[in-house]
Image (cartoon, rainbow, N blue to C red; front, side):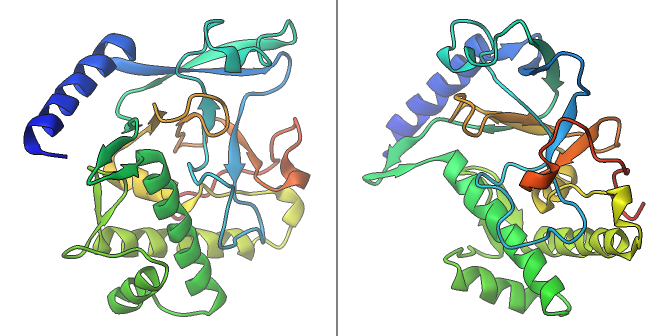
Length: 256
């Protein structure tokens, strides 16, 4: 995309988002959930469930919702029933996943870029845990390159415009694995303590409180509000934990 077309696209994108999506300086998403059940985060990591791929979309642990939560969005129809209620969540500083656009004859997407990076972050955490290895800069770089994730001067793409440093990746791995070791040290598995996904740690470090997913508002992926303080319960990502009741234990985050 040449410079003038790119500037025109960015100008339109900014105006479009301000007019259509921004509400009073913050961003809002709507979550539909069953009346009488506790509203909880989805996709939490529980005892023994760490693996290379955690969920299909990699958007992390949190409360999912729609940008367009009204009846004008046909994708919310299945949720707009007398048995469900709507709860709104504000995202003060979300990472915005913008619509795809063409550049150099290829189709790019913030959503696919974010998902691919998030899944590789899962892979790294699982790799170092499973192999009982100490993360190092060179080994992380080599593993990412082997998976087709290439760095440019120690920077990696989280979206088309947001970059991640190798030091941030190392920090996430250390923090997450420390918490995972605390999780598995609990001998009473019935307590169901849980962790946030690795991508949540990165988003916390970078100061994002959620994902505002303009790329896909259909419910296949959706937008997500991150909760870092355990004020909401959670459900695990595996089928046996996808029940209406929340996990019985508490969130382990940043070593406690």
